[in-house]
Length: 449
Image (cartoon, rainbow, N blue to C red; front, side, top):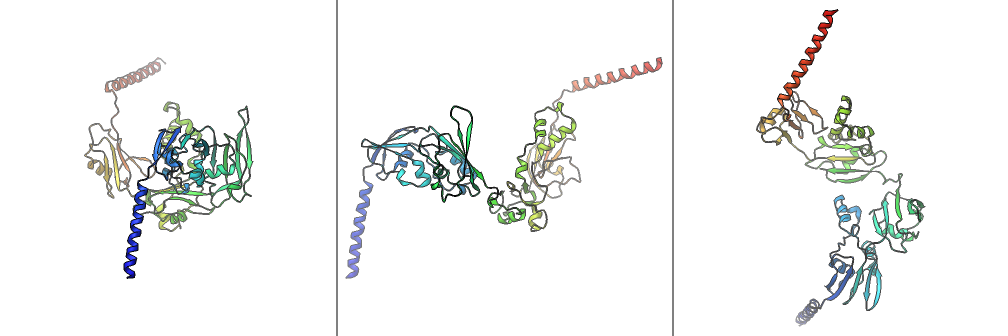
């Protein structure tokens, strides 16, 4: 008897819930008007559960799903900056909502980044939304999680703007927050240094800001999180890694999990970040000059500098890994970069061959083997001009029986220069005539004496 009663009650509840769900799906939607600086202003039918952000999205204004920027890849962060409220010109911090003659202003950015739900209200039928264009900004850069230009609203303070920039980075120097403020009527500015290290959180930092202020958060050079290196390529855990004063190459190779199954440590590189970005005035000078303005030594220096990877350490990362740091294991510098390519067992053949392209590498084979694999020479190649371009360092090597080819190397077969043989013949004849004239003149002088 009890089981039957329970079954009847269960069925009644199911019927009731089904009726409630059916009634919700048949609710008449509300109509909301969106005007102002939006791609598609107009009236939009929206569900009764719609909020302000839903109406803005309906006009095709892109509102990103703002997450922790430290979890975003470089590509994702660039996409976020290019296709988001940080790149468009909608004034999302000063949206006006008019309802029954009463107008309220809402800061949608505070909802999206800080989660303040009161700035994303539920909508009602007949609401009128006006979105302005941005008028003024404050810029935030340095050690914050999301450097950007942020729309300025009267009453903004330093703490709020830093929170809208997704907060301070781990290596931020709280004692070195600089506010650059333009002086009225001049092209100069004041630098207002703020020490916020004594505040418990950013909400407590109430220093008032002005439109066009520029905020730079300094970096704590003594922070254990101030120094880092980047590892990319065929490793098990690519990314950025913090380093101390004595962190060595092998330590980071272990932290990134070592090479993946396809990783090729033989051709991996370690680049000194600061040196690779260092300006070389002499190289800049030579690069804007023509060959006729250079000495042969200067031209050779320029050519070799352009071929080589600047800042590359001269070491073997495979030796570092296999020796477990016993050799080829330097102390890393802040900004260093490690790249491990995938194994590439091919030799490239380029230039005047019938079928230029990639040929599988075979140990001990000479350059002629790879040229034959590409169908041999064309009739437009230059005799004696073949070069092997090393993948490891970009150097150009003359081929020979004792010159081994390595995976990734290139065999380059140049073409004949497009020259007029008749002009060459005339130049040779002219030179011979001049030499003969000089010889005859000297002979006459000798005989006369």
